[in-house]
Image (cartoon, rainbow, N blue to C red; front, side, top):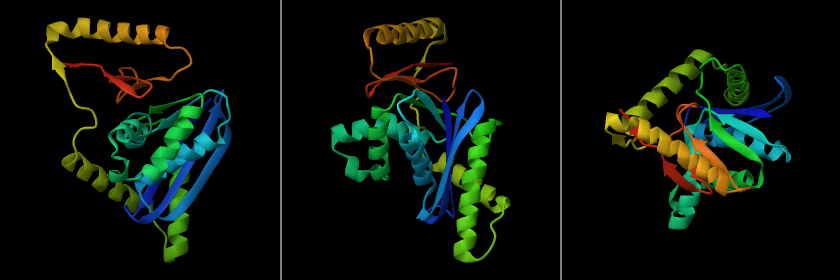
Length: 229
């Protein structure tokens, strides 16, 4: 089963938000979940969509797709590190992230990144549903219609601000070009060895490119794949 999630908020932060998820099995939609919040943020709506999907999901295996790297990394990498360092109280949204982390560990599920607004049918559908929820709530509270032009403008401004002011999600490490082939072999060998050694535990690949993972994560321990120029 595949589940596509999305969340949105306008204005962000502290605006009207919507979340949605779509469950797909054998290329057929089997369930839709959606909702809204009158005072929230984009990140909280993205996290809520994942939580709602996890709560709905039974024991069957599934892959949850989100276009929010913040949500994915927070749930399956960062939160366990925050707990170990005792810094949970210093981070935002840990009420949702901690609960999502707990659910994730109980389920037979993977959470993977999908590029937003890139032509994926079900990601686009989830995006449309959460935006409709957000727009309906906005109209109910403010008495006026929101148009998609305003939403997209706000989204692009937020994305540009994040790009200019935030560090890269993944720290880059480089090696000499001549080491590229060996780097690939080492990474793939490590993944194979871990897969053979650990049974019944979670093994994840974290990525900004679905076909080329940046990290292996095993039970909260992150193994970095070197980036090669």
